[in-house]
Structure formats: structure tokens, C-alpha cells
Image (cartoon, rainbow, N blue to C red):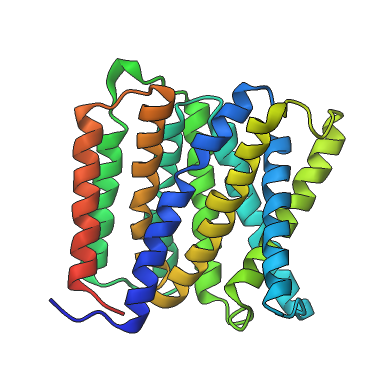
Length: 296
């Protein structure tokens, strides 16, 4: 086995953390939707709390908030992409099971690889093999039989979330303009765009900002959404893509559907079939193979 480089030691764990924390979206989001909170309200408070946490961290660590006009343009695009990914995913929860919706988002590694090929960055054969194996594992996971209701609207929304998420990853990895921006500052500005978008959407919808948010448990869910699938996931994603590259970081996102499926099964009673277990095993084996056979 080849000795892993310093970048790999940092990047691989960061990629795993990204997948696990992003896979927790349904654990905190679905109960809020069931309590009557709108998607716009949920995502506004999720992003607003995340900005407060990150802003406090940046102030305490004495980091500068200063960016150039050109960097602001790239960060605006990143913010809109991340906002779109969250919006599409939460809307998908309305039509299909949360575990399946989040699993379908994991098809983004294939889209990342194809975008990178378009940019003339061709992955090595172990990475391609891992992509194919993880793709097969995800397809097997979705074959849940009659117990799983599959609405085409939910599938389309989940795939739309995957596509814009793939663009988000590639831009972070490839843009030289924002290369000098710290991971925390990048996340802060990207989420600030989302907070503004969802604040405007909530106001124009004509519903109270806190509609459907009742009791301490709902506010607890919002804080958890802000910390884990938002701050931690986005920051660790930036760390992973900068250390091991966009494609490898994407493949490590296999922990996202695994986490989401376990959440759906344990928290919401969604079916855990043999196909899901087989798919998880194949995907985990593919990730392990990639880590063992490749290095930065």
C-alpha cells in the first residue's frame, strides 16, 4: 500500500465528514416540514444561523472579511448554486422518501467526473472504477420494491440538486480567483447569498417568517441544520476538494446516501431492504479501494 501524502491525510477524512454531515439533512429537515414549516422558512433560518456561527468564528480568529469585486462575483455564483441544491433537495422530500432523495443526489460524482473531463482533467483508472462501482451501488440502493413510492417529480428534483452541487464542487476546485480565500470565509459568503435569497422568497410568499416553527425542539432542529449539514459539511467539502481534488472528494460523498438511508430507516421507518445493504457494501468497498490505490 502506498503511503498517503499530507494532502490525502487531510482531504480523505474531510470528504468523509462532508458525506456524513450532509446525509443528516432529512434527520432535522423532515420533522420541520411535517410540523408545517415551509421550505423557504427552514432554509432561511438554517442559513441565517450558519452565518452567525461562521461570522463569530471569523471575528474571534481575526480573519478579514475583505474580498475583491471579482471574488464577490464567483462567491455569488457559488452561493446561488448551493442555494439551488438545498432547495431542490428539500422540495424532493415532498414527493419521495428522504433516504431515496438524498441517495439520488449522490449521483453527482458522475456529473463531476464528466464536467472535469469537459475541462480536460481526466481521472485515473482507479477513480473511474470507483465512480462506476459507487454508481452501481447507488442504483442498487434505489431498488426497494413496492414499499418505496417513486414520484418522477421527486427524482427530477433530486437530480437537479445533484447537478448544481456538482457545479459547486468543480468551481471551488478550479477557480484561481477564490484560491486565496479561506474555507471559512468562502462558506460564510456562499451561505450569505442563500440567506438573502430565502429571506426574499419567504417575504414574497406572504407567510410569517416563523410560520410552522413551534417549540424549542423545532429551533433545535434549525440549529442542528445550520451546524452539521451546512457549516461543517460545506467547510469540510472545501477542505477536501482543495487537498484531494473534486472527483475524489465527490466519491467520498458515498457516506451521504449511507447516512441518509440509515436516518430514514431508524428515524422515519423507511424500509431497509437487502438491496440497500448490498448497495452500501459495494459503495464502501469502492471508496476503500480508491483510498488504498491512489494518492494525491
